[in-house]
Structure formats: C-alpha cells, structure tokens
Image (cartoon, rainbow, N blue to C red; front, side, top):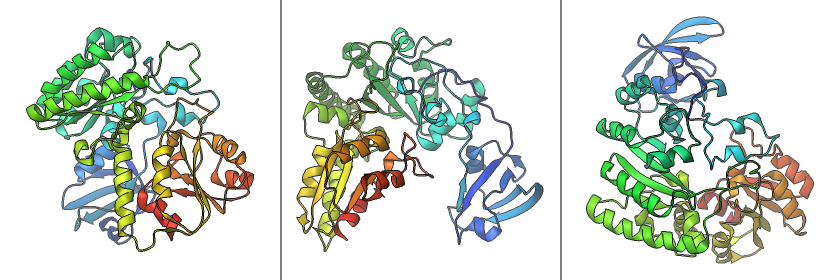
Amino acid sequence: MSGCTSADPHPSADGVVVAGVRANTDASSAGLRTGDRVRAINGVALRDAIDFQFHAADAVLRLEIEREGRRLPLTVVRARADLGVELEPPRPGDIATCANKCVFCFIHQLPKGLRKSLYVKDDDYRLSFLHGNYITLTDLEEADFERIVEQRLSPLYVSVHATEPGLRHRLLGHPRRSAEILPRLERLAKARIRVHAQIVLCPDLNDGPHLARTVAELAPLHPHVATTAVVPVGLTRHRERLPALRMLSPTEAVALVDTVDGWQRDFLSALGSRFVFLSDEIHLLAGRPLPAAAAYERFPVIEDGIGLVRRFEDGWRHSVARRRVRRVVRDVTIVTGTMFAPRLAPLVAALEHGHRARVVPVANDFFGHNIGVAGLLTGTDIQRNLALRGDLGDMVLVPAVTVRDGDGVFLDDLTPVDLARDLGVTVKLVSPTPSALLDVLCR
C-alpha cells in the first residue's frame, strides 16, 4: 500500500486488550483474563501491542489492568519465553491509512459492495513489523523513525517499486510529500534495521532499465536491505477510470527469469546472498522450473509468494515419504486456483487411489481471470464452477485461505455452510499445507 496517513500514527496510551490467554502459561497462572485491558507494564503506559512486547521482556511484570471498569494490579512472573497472551488487533480507526493513489493499487480495483474492512489501505509501520504488511515510508514522521530505532522494530517490509524519484512519485500516484525512498532506507540501514523490499512490476513503467537501476541502487544497502522481491502487478476486471496497465507476457517473464538468474549469480558471489527474488507466479508464467529450496535462502518473504510452491511441493513429497498409508480413502473434490492446479494435480495423481480425488481449478469470475491464486476465490465462484461438474464425491475440500480468519466467511460474505447447502455435499476447509491435505485424503 502507499502514502499519506489519515489515522493518528501516534496512538494515545490506552493500553491493549487481551484477546486470549492460553492455559498453563505464566499469564494464566497470574490470573490475566480475556477482555482485560493492560494499561501499563512496570509503570510504563502502553500505546499498542509493540509497547506490550517491548516492555514485557522483563522477568517480573507488574501490570496495571482494567477489568469490568475497575483498575487492578497484577504481577506476572516470567518462567517461559512465551507469556501465553494473545492481543486484539488494532481497530480500523487506529491504523495509519494510505491516501495515495498508486497506479497498481489492488484495493482501488475492488468492486463496490464488499465488507468495509476490505477497503482499508494501511501504511502503518506497526503492522509492517507485527504482520509483514508492506509500507511506503512516504509519510513516516520523525517520532516514528525514533521509535523504530529505539524499540528495534525489525524487520520492516517496504514497498519500493522504483528508486528513481520521479518514477516512484508517478507510481505512487503523485503523493503530496516526497516519494524519494533511498534516503529513508539509508537511514534505516545506518540504524541496522532489517528491511525486505518489494517491487510490484508494471510492464512499460518500472521494468527493463528502471528495474535494473532499482536493484543496483538497493544492493549496496545489503545486508540491512536483506531481500528485494519482484512480484507481477495484479489486475482485476474492475479498473474503470484507473490508469491503463497490462500484465507481464510469457515472453517477458522468460526474459526476466534469465535476467534475474544472472543477477543472483553475481550477488551470491559479491554479497553472499542472491538478494533479488522473483515470485512463483513469474516462474510459472515463464514455464520455467522452480528454483530449488536452497535458492530461496530459508524463504524469508514466502508470504509474498516467493517460494510458496517450492516449499509446498517439497513438503508434500517429504510428508508422503513418511506416511504408512498413501492411499486416497475418500471420494473428494479439491478446489484450488487456476495458477496452482497444474502443480497440485500430478502430486495427488501420484498417490494410490482407492477413491477418486479430483483437483478442480476454479476460474475467478469475480475479480477476473487474470487473478489465479486460491486466496482470492469467492464462494460464488466456487459454487458456480462446481455446480457445472455434477459428481463432486462425498466432500469438497476448500483452501482455508479463501475465508476470513475468525468467522470463516468468503470475500463475498458467503460461508462454507452456504456452499455446502447449494452444492448438496459436505464442504471442509483445509489449511494449505501438505500434511493437512494428506491427512484428509489418506486418513
């Protein structure tokens, strides 16, 4: 996401709310409960979850909590590294949001009528540290910089896109403040804050020599700029009155893979790291073999789609090799996106089959067929695609990433219960891991 903050980036010290306390932990032994608001630790008022983490490192924690309107003291004696506390996420109004108009912004491409939380564009360094959200640094205030350094908020995930100031200014939608990124990254590097950089590649804008310049200007900041991820622009069919953009072509993807392979060899020799990494989608579009697991250097940016397929496929083969039973024991339909289906189908086909296990690629009609990942499938698209297929077996397996954490609702607010009713078959959400899928297929 990009740019200007509309929420207060300096929250008041109202404390943090406990979302859960795990049993048999230091926090539960001390009597901390779900719903308690922790206002201070050892006399220091708390602003957010980062303050909680920072000040909860001591061996003895004297908490000031608020419970049912009453202020109470509570002492936690730390015997383990993990206190056993889960905190509520920040409310939308507490998040520093983006007012920029990046030419490629995915949220600007959402249709109307979805739930409000989907339209929240964050540019909050706290969420970058806590959850790996990408931020632009465009409106980072001096107090924010000082806090990042003081509390060692590392790593941060930074949307760079281009280091050339004029080009980055254009990509970010001409923000009111300077979009120049290198001075900010240099300052973070000097403070030894680790950064993972991202480039959303827009053909005819920041590719070719512009991409080469960006990578060349980031590399001297290694190891503090630890990685640079190159991901393709995602375009939905809802781009009315937005800048004209196009997708990367297969031919361009092939050339890009070859170029980055050369850069990686040079960087590995010079820096001890490959430094720049391509998303799985670019490798698949190019029709090239995925790099070996070692080439991803422990998968530091896997949540950005860098090495996700490689880790799944290697994990699948490892899990299969360890299993006593490798036979499909139920008649199932496995839902996935169009991008991953050709990779998953042969893995499933290689199992012993007592029953059928169909891998069904579901086309994304809601966002458009350019979007091929499973995580953006809607309940309606799954229902429509499967309804045309007739026999679905005894169960439909849907990747759990298609639903929202907590309440299990698809992007279009359908639920797995709705889907099961419409299809007349059991629907089961499955974690997108090899072991979870194999458990359902083979147990």
